Image 1 (cartoon, rainbow, N blue to C red):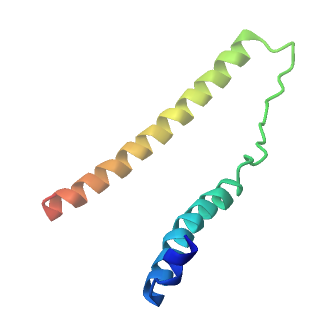
Image 2 (cartoon, rainbow, N blue to C red):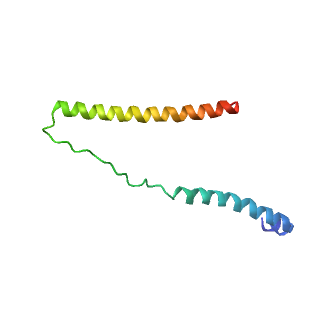
Image 3 (cartoon, rainbow, N blue to C red):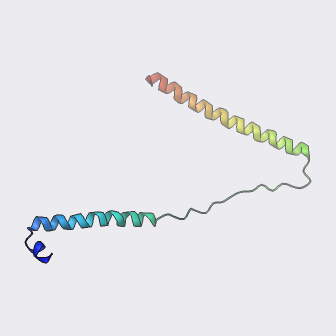
Length: 93
């Protein structure tokens, strides 16, 4: 093997070195990339605290408020998509 490589020209040495270093570099890049940001960030969960003596009427009133808020958000979102659609239609898309 030593005799074989001793008779090789300089450009073949360079090509052999690159042939070894490029895959090693790719493997190292994947290794170091896998080590970064693997732990998910801390997640904060907010919980509502309700009094135990809450009546059914209070619960239903809160549910109606929540439903109205959800419907308003959905309506706004639908209007945003309609405006985008109208703009795209004007462009012929």
